[in-house]
Image 1 (cartoon, helix red, strand yellow):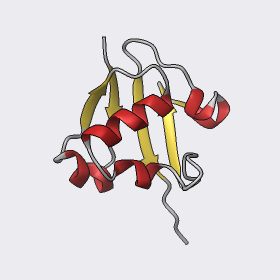
Image 2 (spheres, rainbow, N blue to C red; image 1 turned 180 degrees about the vertical axis):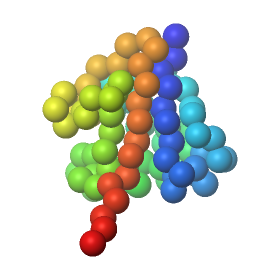
Image 3 (cartoon, one colour; image 1 turned 30 degrees about the vertical axis):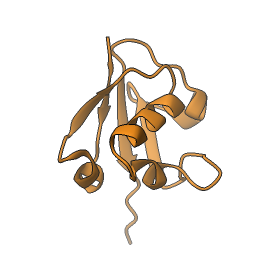
Length: 91
């Protein structure tokens, strides 16, 4: 059973306007790599030059922030939902 990735509006131009895409990855890192293979250019929006999730991008697995789990090594199981949420600054 695949995992679902919820794509935020600013990144949908890279996913042909798909809001929800499915991946078969075992970790968040693999999910990002799979997204990149299908939607070139998305990875550079999600990770920095060191390969770490950008600090202004929040990634959740079933509403749990991966920064409090295992970051890119966070394991995924069937039916998980991954949400990518860009941080919004205001003032």
